[in-house]
Amino acid sequence: MRYQRSSQLFKAASAVIPGGVNSPVRAFKAVGGTPVFVTKAKGAYLYDADGNRLIDYINSWGPMILGHAYPPVIEAVIEKAQLGTSFGMPTEIETKIAELAVSMVPNIDQIRFVNSGTEACMSAVRLARGFTGKEKIIKFAGCYHGHSDSFLIQAGSGAVTFGSPNSPGVTEGTAKDTLLAPYNDLVAVAEIFEANPSQIASIIVEPVAGNMGCIPPQSGFLEGLRALCDAHQAILIFDEVMTGFRLARGGVQELYGVNADIVCFGKVIGGGLPVGAFAARHEIMAHLAPLGPVYQAGTLSGNPLAMAAGYAMLQALESDAEVFERLAQKTAYLHEGISKTLKAHQVLHTINRVGSMISVHFSESPVVDFETAAEGNNERFKTFFHGLLNAGIYIAPSAFETWFITDALTYEDLDETIAAVAKIAPSL
Ligand SMILES: *Cc1c(COP(=O)(O)O)cnc(C)c1O
Figure 1 (cartoon, helix red, strand yellow):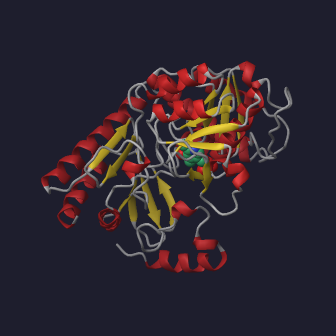
Figure 2 (tube, helix red, strand yellow; figure 1 turned 45 degrees about the vertical axis):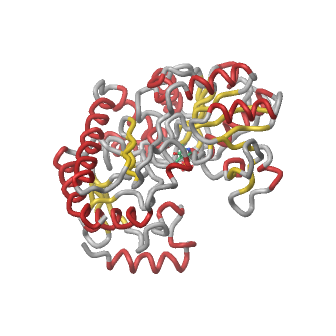
Figure 3 (cartoon, rainbow, N blue to C red; figure 1 turned 90 degrees about the vertical axis):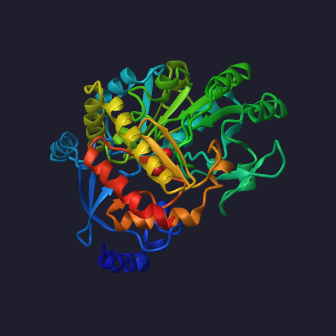
């Protein structure tokens, strides 16, 4: 495959856009080379500026769970656009998607729409603080909740410690209110509660982690977080921006049978348009403006095009009883195929998978948290990534990312992917 035109476009972009991209995860910093510029996509395939067809395992980082340019979503957007694209006034479609979302997800009565997952998580934390009157939050190393200041925090030194900023521009003042624990480590969470009596407003967690590869919660982890929040009058926030409407109709709350207090959404809920949302029971949502004192707003929130796309997407998922099972089966097939192939070539690896989320780690030990995810061999990943790209298969350009399986993928596509892995394996 050739990427000449993409290289030219990247050069032009780099002159006027920092790093040539509008989100750093699109850059090829971790793998080398220049990003692929897309011209269009349909179903399971991307078509790039050089005319290559690529099998897509990113799917816009999750939203395109039924494939690109999914006809009911496209039709809904076109129809709405002809009626005007934004009013800054209420529209009926907002109620329709809200009713549908609330009916699909357990344990929520009301939902507020925003424009991104970042906004959803940022607002959820503000609501949790406003509701509890407490200021500190607990987050887990390697979990991503968007780029708002409170979340750009890394663990300091010592067992139970304040966080420290992991980006310039985040203040020490903000960092001291975010406390870090390793994922899947309930003991660490309990210690943080003990060390900060009556100060923890909330735990925010990816209930199935997807931003350090795919890392499932170990047995009892989510239940333990629920129990700790109950014992300490803290709010449990499930950040389901990635998992919501992907792992089950009702997300991880349904899949693992654990209730959160506030749930955040993004990605699938917008059907490929910029949408985020956060949801909770009445008693919590009553604290949100204009009902209550916790402020939150947005000029384009509930935008009619975005709501129409999201509504069409949720309707499609709601009306297809088998979709999540079908996705899980395709993902399991890919898992087995890749695993067998790598084993046959004695390539040390660990593959994690939950539903339609899967990640390949070039390390031997189980990947259960950020530390173990970081043990993967990045040189091997680079070879793997570029080998797949040359074979017309696009995975995320970082070893810390989940692959998103779409229902548009056929078993032929999966076989083509496994065959490509077989070709690369000897050089890994
Ligand atoms: C993608 C993601 C976000 C951020 O969403 P944006 O729409 O990119 O702002 C937050 N949390 C999780 C779990 C995500 O995967």
